[in-house]
Length: 383
Image 1 (cartoon, rainbow, N blue to C red):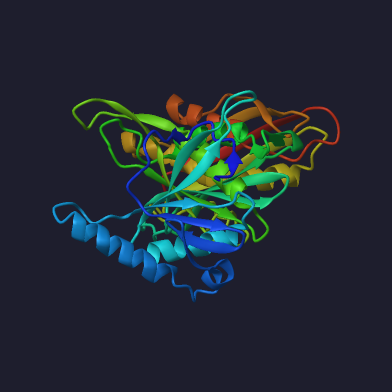
Image 2 (cartoon, rainbow, N blue to C red):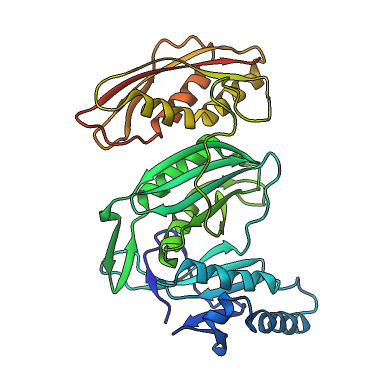
């Protein structure tokens, strides 16, 4: 039996795929229904699973001599399996030569609907990024929020918190349902602002990595991967235009606490692609309800995304410089409302609009009382 979880964006299975199925049941690991080893042995890196998978792959190649080597495996794992154990199974699958995997899940779309078997693709390994490649990291670390971190090479571009609430986790049809609608919406918005492969003539996909803490369960990661894959875009490189997921998603081991953006804020120089660019704060005003230093810290943590807006403007005007002033309201939930331009002096409306959108996606602590009014200036110079 495949465990159930709500996957509103997964692909339903019509025919069983021609791939080995690795299952876990009652603490034991199975390959195509045959017992291989205990899960504890796999987690300790001493299992026979890798050798059994390699034999399956070799058998497949002998029967399909004119085809490409088989590199896809299917995982049928309990949804309450600790993620560290799921990752140990993933590692063995990849080590056996299967670079692509799909989780098989009993999908429970809505109340009253019949469950359907679905496949959710995930990369079996997190490959090292290129020096200038942007990667979105989604971290499952705390009960109250997810953390979205864009990194470009070793540079942290931005950090965004996505609040989680008790209403986002409930029972349905004998399965735990994780409502990831807020996460899916934020991922789509973040990709529209920061994603590298947005041109329909570009068939490459952006990359996302789902990271977790040691206490997380597989169901949480499955639901988060599904929410990330909800983000779609058109691709026109083939014979017919098609709609594809914007991300390839990999499942990673736990990550350390994210650092602040990589360069000191004192001189405002953030990132490595153009070290002469200066991005520094100007005047700030914050009404009662939140400490100004808290607002300042959160905005500065996201200077990387504002820099990207500015860099796009520099491509059209290498001498572009000036001050951007944004007025915003932080509501009682800590969400940003009405982030708008307020007499900015930077002579590029598209850059100013991009920065205002960036402010709209920030999250703050809940104010002590009422809404908080903020006016924030950022000064940009090409150096």
